[in-house]
Image 1 (cartoon, each protein chain N blue to C red):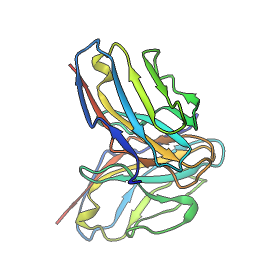
Image 2 (cartoon, rainbow over the protein chains, first blue to last red; image 1 turned 90 degrees about the vertical axis):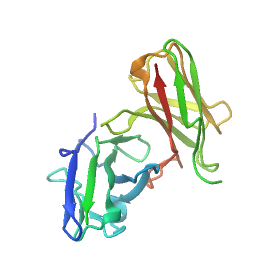
Image 3 (cartoon, one colour; image 1 turned 90 degrees about the horizontal axis):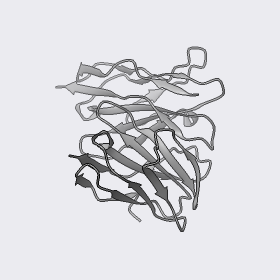
Length: 109
Length: 114
């Protein structure tokens, strides 16, 4: 069975500092990895997908199959990045999403 | 179509009562998912539909829980004989078949069992 681990519950940084939100997964096949974000009082929304190799709002994430990781990074955090972030995995196109427990990012002025 | 809609937003019920939630997915999405989220946890999968067929159910979904999607459009999730442990946010999401775009989530229904 697949599993997603987000080892930290909270990351607090100052504005302008680099951010790395850790995500590790357990799955024997080729997974699809996602990061979802939930801003205060808003619904859960897709931030980025590993398959598109895109940068969204300055965030990037690289799938490292050797380390089974998909860490989310941003070089310079902004206050508006404060939110709950969830890493999620799909074990194939027809599979369901499995989420990690999430991490709260707090960016202080 | 403004996205995935869930109704009600909040529900407070007494232990032992039955409750039913509704989800209206994005109209062109043929897959619909139900998740449950408790404090400090990520969303946990409950069940999903492709059109009107229920394709998978989690072992989290006890026999007190039932979900339907009768015409392949909206879905309902019913909890019978509610327990305090059922208190959670119930999330609905939809997607296209085999989409690698992930899901579109609704705002959720927060259930409180007193």
